[in-house]
Image (tube, rainbow, N blue to C red; front, side, top):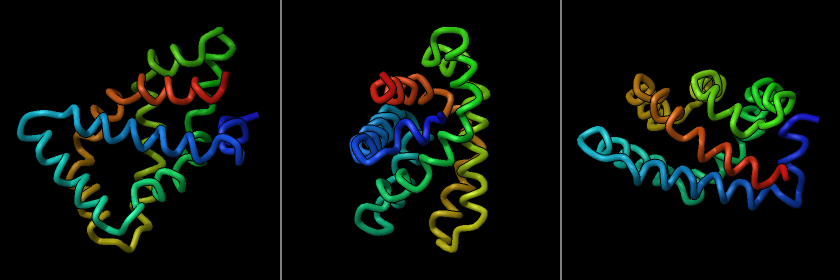
Length: 144
């Protein structure tokens, strides 16, 4: 059974999406300096696309994201600690997650989304790697 099957059932899905959105908000809020201000501005612009846009996008992306990280999660299960394995494999985890968003943005019609993503894509891997421990904790909350 993959993470999508396990985590996106009707009992967990809404809470999982909420927790992922809370994690994203915290990750963005933790950024500082010029790049942090730019990231916060970009995130605010995306939130302004329409009410509920961020939760909608998270809900849409989670199945593909979980499918992308399933091999890493399963390796961790075999080793006895999938959460720690995601964290120690944060480079691979970030690449897997970014492959999903890269593909999604390629097909979007919303120029503000495409332009914002392209502007920050160069630094995205670092930000995603930094978020992997928090994502792993969210996943763990719903897999135990």
